[in-house]
Length: 376
Image (cartoon, rainbow, N blue to C red; front, side):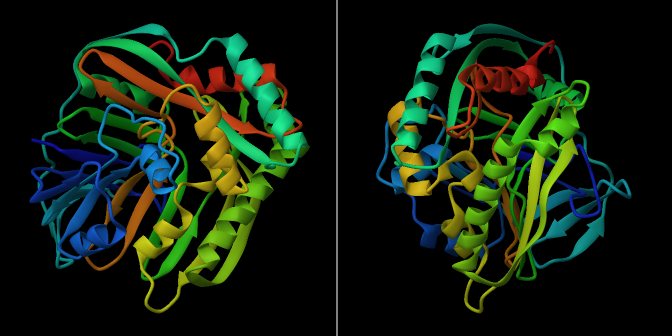
């Protein structure tokens, strides 16, 4: 039985590995969380799982309710089955680092499914009023930017693997994830890297700025003063957060516009090297929750999010990924992410709000990001 699959549907030289995890030796999950427990467990084998955004609110003392799946979930595995998506070869990956080529495992092909839209957690009118309130708080100097999100509800029937495969086929991305927590399923098709660590070298790629396809859309996004200001603000936050536990922190790229299946996204690239005595969990603890899905300053923005949003985010805008027992790992930001509990599916979307934001334009951006589910 598959408990977790991290799938690369848009392979590249740096993002080329699909990981398959079967029965875990142990599961670390529930309401009681500690970084030290997670760090200790990660030394025993591979960890695959997630930290929800709701956990971040718990840590920050801003709990406003919880989503339907556990606040955090990690399975511990002695071995993983992996695929190099560039060569197409499968291998078993042992917790001692050994790799042995193996036959291709049988994966669920994905049968038929059906989605029926049930509504958002708020109407467009409330959304627009809230964005106006957020802009007023920005004008008063409470914060500079806040990421405001909404949740859509769908009725679901059929095969969850069918939905997961359809999502990745429609929108190929580097960071796909399917996790069975036992209490519900988490499915993600994220384009955004939160953090990758290899031999102490750390990279993060904060993503801020979105444009739906259309004539001249890529150039308009690249030249948009609003989107550049947001992206620069978030990149600077990510740089400072990595700097707490790293040295040689460098901004490698700013304002790069990347094309995905339904939208353009603006991305910046930051690298660093972990300080002696620091590890991947040090970097995660310093940077969680991700800057791109909170705002600036992060403390004020997260408080505003807890006060204004209509419902808990759940796993959405948390992080999903894996670590190795020797300290490497990779986590995505859990955007384009849904949670499935029986016959109900929840899907989050949102965007960064600044004083220059147009409330109706922000609503349209949310709808553009919902396009991943249209026509499935």
